[in-house]
Amino acid sequence: MSAVRFSVHKKFHLLQSRTSIWEASPEELRHYRLIFILSGNGQFVLDGKIAAYAKSGLILLKPDQQPVFQEDRGTEIFVIAFHTFLADDFQKKKAFDPDFADTYKQAENLCNNTRLTQGKPLPNERDGQTIAYLINQIAFEISQKQSSHVKLIKGSIDLIMTILARNNFETKRTEEKSSQQVLTERMVEYLKGELQQNKTVRIPELLLHFNTSEEVANLCMMNSTGMSLRNFIIKYKADLFKSRMLKVDVGEISSFVKNHLTT
Image (cartoon, rainbow, N blue to C red; front, side):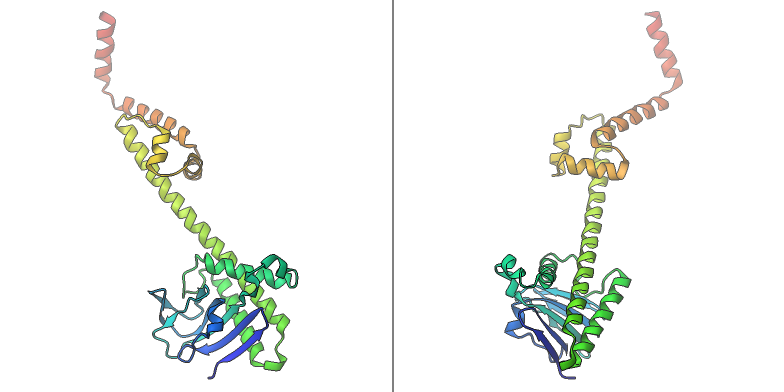
């Protein structure tokens, strides 16, 4: 099939094509782009790194980034390129089309700060199915050429970017939660080791050791143990003392008391 193109002046460019005949024009390379894998699977190279792609996979590109598809026989893609007309003097130009300006800004932020896995479908299966449906709806509209419904296309693109932004945020939150969990586990392990050796734990030294702030350390500890950093240290000291007292031989205590009473 030949490539199908559709553009709305100073807003976006759409392209449906097989990767075997697709080559981004210099015009397209200047824009932020979203590539949706309509069919096929294989590998692609982006910024010198090889990654896998699959059907319904997404690739988010900043200006001048260009993926090279390696195993592209039968692979078909749909490209949404967001015109960078709004990039300069954004607030002034936004007044002429505030709705699309917000969509453009979402695309810019997403492409510059993506946490989604390039080439892979969204982890949220339902959202992935919604995006696939919207892409197919847009593809149908642009295939009608003169009868293409620009308002419907713009609305679909806006919804796609909203869904992607939400998933990107959820991925970021999951990553942060995971990193907090790792930090908490490392701090707890360190504290227990130091206290079991009867060492004095100073919070400023602890924070320096883990290169973190007291606010972050307290947040991590609260989320994991329900206690602040200081309260965890106090409680663990008390529990350690009780544990050691229970292990003391009763005969030793009797002998100790007897010796002290007779002196």
